[in-house]
Length: 131
Image 1 (spheres, rainbow, N blue to C red):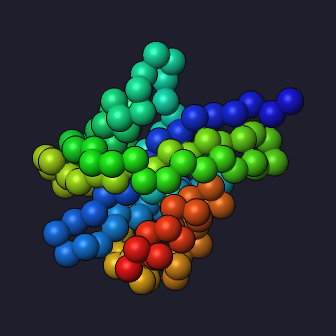
Image 2: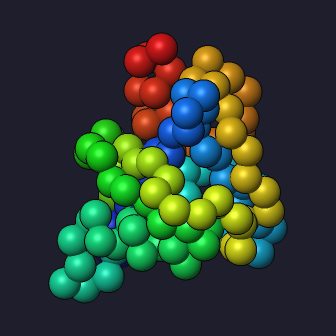
Image 3: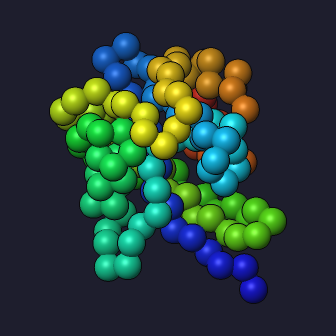
């Protein structure tokens, strides 16, 4: 049986209504695909604390969580991911990639121009639908 991994993802929006998109590095699983930054929820950790911790680790900035946005389960070849996307804003600092190849800010209507990791697509489609 495949292992299910609970993962949180940050939908970070800036003052210009642009969304932060992160390119997975060639060394990461599902390489060279775009995603919303975040990571695994640790045992005994709530989703909001996990996201704040992961963004501090990955992007060296502090976020403020706003609202649960999308909860989707996707089956990959070797594991299942329960991806919980949460709307956020940067509270302190500027997002700086440490694990990702690059970060870009995009308007909602341009999000579908990127090659997204399959688990992130439902949140992308929901964001575009908000426009």
